[in-house]
Image 1 (tube, rainbow, N blue to C red):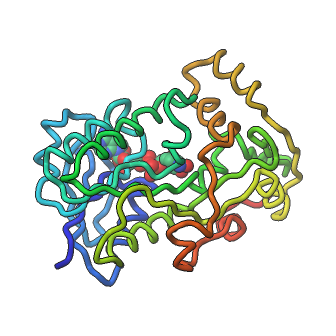
Image 2 (image 1 turned 45 degrees about the vertical axis):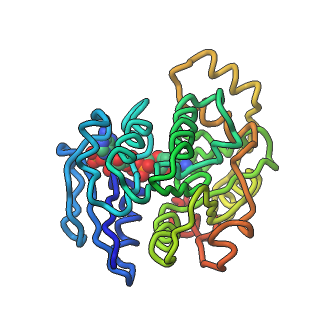
Length: 294
Ligand SMILES: NC(=O)c1ccc[n+]([C@@H]2O[C@H](COP(=O)([O-])OP(=O)(O)OC[C@H]3O[C@@H](n4cnc5c(N)ncnc54)[C@H](OP(=O)(O)O)[C@@H]3O)[C@@H](O)[C@H]2O)c1
């Protein structure tokens, strides 16, 4: 029987999941939960839209989640503090058989509580809740950084100035620090395989990766496509000063996670996709396809 799947959110990750799941030969039934105010147009996809808001109470969310075999959250941290934990409570209350929480990111277990990014503690609260029960099966897909986010100005690693053709590449912590990246397209494709290619969906934390590189590789890639690169190291100490100066600024909170170099990289060879020889998009291929030229 084909599963009934609910995807929550249709942003960068949600759209990639929608594309991969709806084009999979298993032809699952796919619904997508969007806020009633959302301007996202999904009319070209063979999906059903349902309306809801993950910042509502667990009691309000529960009935929206009933009747699905698999729920996948693709909202990012968009719902604000407590929304991921709230959603996990609603999923359990609704008796969803299998849940993929929004944990498409770094190794929160290894990073631990009390990190520079307080939202990460909530990810651990969700893990504790899921681990404390055995009614709802769950799978966390650990992806590292979205490849696109590595080049996003707000991440503070790559800064392109098209008026001069100059780029600054900042190494967080040091040039040899590792970064695992997975493109949104690969996350969608591999997650669809995890969900639909196996009679028994793997449970627990599943690591995937498009590529694992070092900050020095990022600077070489930017240079390779024609930018004149200025290289800087931003140290943990520097980021701590910035964080104390402006506690509301999320930039240094995120950057510190990579500068500390714990739980942010793993070998592609040990990943779910690596072990199965699934083709993925390397950093070089992503740069060729997406990075603007000077
Ligand atoms: N590991 C990483 O590197 C990482 C992790 C997360 C995000 N990011 C980066 O951050 C950006 C966000 O990516 P994303 O796909 O996670 O998120 P996104 O593109 O911002 O999409 C979020 C989705 O959630 C919906 N949403 C927001 N608030 C909601 C609510 N209260 N209730 C229900 N739905 C809600 C949005 O719908 P509306 O149309 O209603 O707004 C949207 O469809 C990307 O650029 C990504 O690269 C990176």
